[in-house]
Image (cartoon, rainbow, N blue to C red):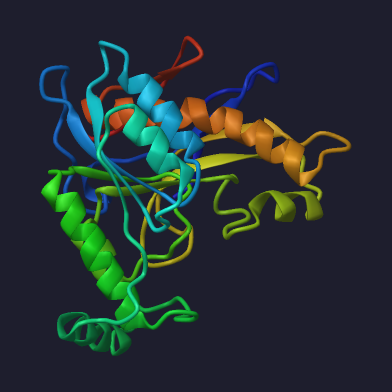
Length: 268
């Protein structure tokens, strides 16, 4: 599915959207939120969670129709957990367990025989990964999470977790996907000498950064850019785009940013 460019001004970020309708949404649509009953989201982080902070700032506005009910990290020492607690949001560090129980072992065996498995297993065993995801899933359920939002979460999910949250699991990636997937997107963009980079909000599937695109914001790659300067420029747009996409998903209304209307063409 080709993205649709909706801005051309060089003075402001370019926004790109995927075109979606009900048949293309990969799973059940999240409930429509409102100010009285906001869409309940769970944020998964691995570090400080700067995108998490931008989402929380948006949720402090009285017109916001989504709220964070829990923040989970795969690292108990993640700085973002402290930030979440400071905002009164329940937070929990759930690390990879040292062993897996019988149920996780059984699920892992089923995944191993499933052609959907497309990612390497190292360094932890598949059963340990499943056990970890079961703990994360239980925590999300206990907080009635309706949309799972990845914000710098550095783990790849197994097909088991993705199937459980199909259509309700989104991520933000620091490139204009499908270009430069993976953990070193800014470095790869500089090495490719591309003129533009950016960020992409996308659905999560069994691949690595291969899920269908929801929205993108692009930035120029400037002469003399380093990984640090390019990442900083991209993050500025991530902090605008991610909360705006959540607004749009929660209310199923057109995405607006920088005083311009951007039609996500979400199913009504």
